[in-house]
Amino acid sequence: MESGVGSTVKIKYLNYKDKATGVTVARLSDCKGDTIHPYFTQNLMSDDGDIILLVSNRTGWWQLYRLNIPDGELIQLTEDADINPHAPCLDGKHMKAYYWDGSFLKSVDLENYESEILYSVPEGFKPSILSISPDGRYIAFAYTERIHTSTLRGRAYSNFLERMFQRPRSVVMLIDLKNEEAIPVWGEIAWISHVNICPVDPDIILFCHEGPWHLVQRMWVVRASTHEIWPLVKQKRYLERVGHEFFMRDGTVVAQYAIRTSPSSSDWKYYDIFVKPDGSGLRKYRYPYLPPGHIKTNSKGDMAVGDRGYPSRDFRDGHSFISLIKYESDYTVSIKLLCRHDTSWNSQKTHPHPIFTPDDKYVIFTSDREGVCNVYMAPVEPE
Image (cartoon, rainbow, N blue to C red; front, side, top):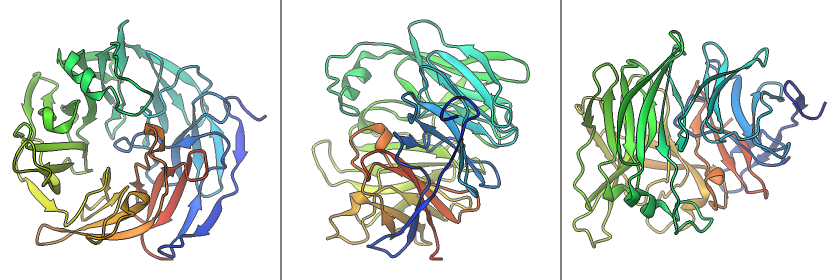
């Protein structure tokens, strides 16, 4: 059977040596339509690293798949009409995937493929990416008012500023799967997204005010049980920007940060920051040159992977590389190029969004270097 829930395709991995670094890269998908991994802040892999949750439109519509990495088996998990390819997440403890099919929050079991409708957002609102607690009990997300804009031109973020200025209504939700309860934890007239549950305390939820980073107080924390909120890192508007925030396993928040001397200057200084949810323990590691577009740390937090890499001042091709970022004792970073990704960057689905495998030994990323999106894997250390 070529398609349908439970159908299996045997992927023959394509291995090639990167011409720039000599690293052997494996292509984990087969150029049949676009295949990507969901957004990089979510949990996407089983604890042992053998299974990764992927999304592909190989049948004509975006569907969820599990890839068994050791044997290359790609198994279709869903057959739905309106899946958001960036939003799914994986409960690695119970091997269930959660995703949006239009306005419906659904689950699918990765073993028996049984699916269930759990919740639906109100009419006139659009849900955001999902975040799940490590024990699989809680799911958090935001839903935001659907609005029309006049500046959307088919390019990613072309209506970003207009949508921020329209101030759509948003609500942060927490779903208690054990008690089958939907809990509104915060809401306001502002564009909210990037909701993340703290992995060591599900009562703590991180969310962001969306928009150009230097124009918003970006990062916020809400305590679900009391509805208290506070800014995680207070920003000076026009001068500071921060974003692409996520939790490490120990509950530390990591984000990308920059500061300049005046609202009209271009003398940005770039950092990765580490901070506790209460705002304490802030550490800043400075980049000597340009930063990546997105980063994700390893389990120890002493290294990150980025989707751009600039190891020297005169290096001009950094937008085409996956980089390894080491956090030094003097609060600087050092950059090592891992391999080329050569993606086009022409839409959200083509963003590499690199992540580490749970054992920190490999990096997985997306690229459309071959005309369609595929998922690739490269070793952190030379093999």
